[in-house]
Length: 336
Image (cartoon, rainbow, N blue to C red; front, side, top):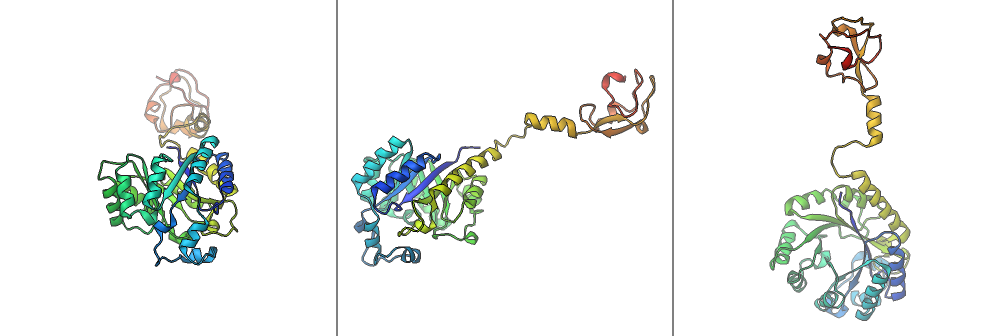
């Protein structure tokens, strides 16, 4: 079993406060998270005058427009440089999703993100995916709201300058996503249809969906995390607390141990139980020396340390070399 790569998606849940962001990085680095991920955008480059907020954003954030909302919850380019340095200090990987071409070039050239994460909303954005196609970095491609044909289009563009290392993330773009929407069997279909590594970007409440995804072969798990589920902001209510995220990490690592390597083998303790629980060929009566053993003289009883019960051909028709008491395991050196 490969080790699952676990991403804590902070996104805008720092509410534009770099001290909150740094505190979250420090906390997450202590619970075994592999990477923290942020979001970066120049709001004016993302939103036109015709933009509107999603229903979940209207419920959880009081800004009148998406542009105003984005401005309230963003950090500057320089602050992201500071976050990258803080991640290095805390020994955790810094990742970031960019939502406009200028921000994308910045996280690539200045922040040197080791992996490009393409959000569900940007997986068909021409300038972003064409730029990423020209680079040579691993890619996480989120697929919420995306048909199989649209995924093929994205993959075609991303691989147009050479085959890329792409992990396709199943995702449901609802915040929070309801259990009956998750459709985790899609993971199998993504793997089969695109012959790709798969992962899961989770927007559901609780940890169960992520655990199921790991058992279905997800190599990457991404889930939103917050410092306070009651804070004002678009993503807080659909995010895990840091305490909940710690339980997620522990559960994933335990699940990996349970899944094992897929090779059928026995542990030392199971071998001992195997010897105890299996049955051997046992004498059902006293059998004198020089007796030809008949089927009526044997039975099958525990333990399994003697001749296996399926191998009666090794015993029936053989002559005893010594007296064999009733209810005893018959041994090969007692017969000829």
